[in-house]
Image (tube, rainbow, N blue to C red; front, side, top):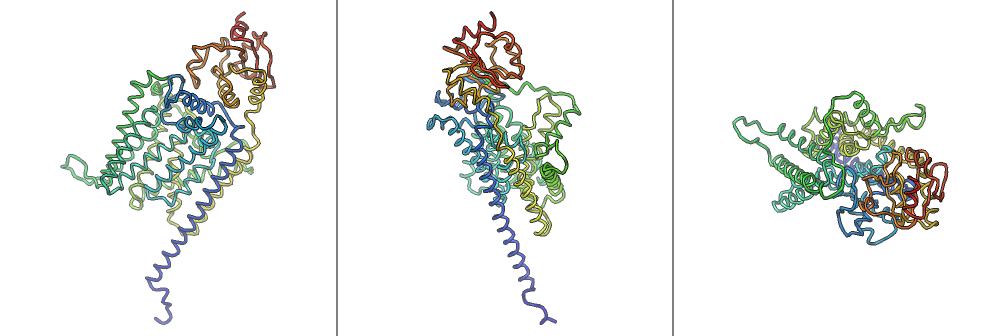
Length: 548
């Protein structure tokens, strides 16, 4: 009988064969995931570089305008600017402002700056993955980061690069914490802890956002881990923690204390020196079922859910990816709850961090009066990305099923992203403003007035040649000097325009109700079906046309 058993079927040989097959699977995974990442980067950059100019809005242009102001003042912060809902201590102006020293071409600054910011976000994600022990998953996570799984994700994260600084901060802070936990060299741990404290302090100076969206969930996740995995010692004063958990707790509490210190500096000192809208005015509110429904569909939209077309249209593929992604995340947390022993401490940490971030967000919007926008989900969506990828990679099924599921999800994501870009390519959101800017520059104007959604984008289209005072969008303009304390220089409120001045209106918006009736002395410098620009020889002549 023994002569009928091939030597290759011995236990040692079978084990070697299994390891060889798993190694081939791992190699194939790396090749495939890196190919997906390279395609995602190339396709996204093709669209961003090729169509960025035609997709501008005033939110994007405000960031670039702030960078230009800081460059002129040679400063990192300025009192001559009305910030939005937080003080921009750590944001994309740290990239845009220095670039203005090398180029006066605003489009070139935006293009290079966007590339730097997105690469920095990917670099921070790579560092986190390495420290979490999932470096082999970075290409897949990176693919999710740079592909538009939803329209709101593309616009807020990839196009405007408004959120990548916050995502960079989250990945870097988590990477530093895990590096501190894993390091065996005392000097390295001291340096890492100091860096973590300093960086967290700077992030706290921005305001309350990162405190609530990252550091609070981080503290909750670490405390939960320490509570669950501490050794039972009823008579002890302090919990009995192993070295990794103890380091994790120390690093987290130091980071949280530092970011709270930065936030207190923001609240007690900086708010009296700089102009920005504080988020501390949010109030607790009763539970409202309508907000729950809004949150539910907001999360679906964040993962790419679309409506309005037939179920046999291409929207089916977008929605299939949305529900598959949500199903994968639910299964991931069920797996963690059922078999926590299969997960390393860093893996448990980033799973729980994403979970508590989700809970904190839901609680914040369900039980306060804070205004909700779908884009506010993006930081949590990004924290969930490593969770979904990790679960798919470790799925306890045969390599064939794992390959089919991973390949299918990747194919859906890349197809949806490519289809979205194909549809996006012909869009031109700035045609009217661009034509108006050209006409006004030819006529010799450099100063003017416009509502927010037109003002700053026209400044960028003019390559900084215009200085435009900003009205609040959605309000009737009855007094040209009633300016909006939002995303413009503070000297607009004290200095009046010198020389010719123009007024720019969207004829279809509330801003034009009174001007359309009372203004009859201005020269029409530009007009189309949506916009009209009126010119005056001086500020006094313009103001007189409002009130005489």
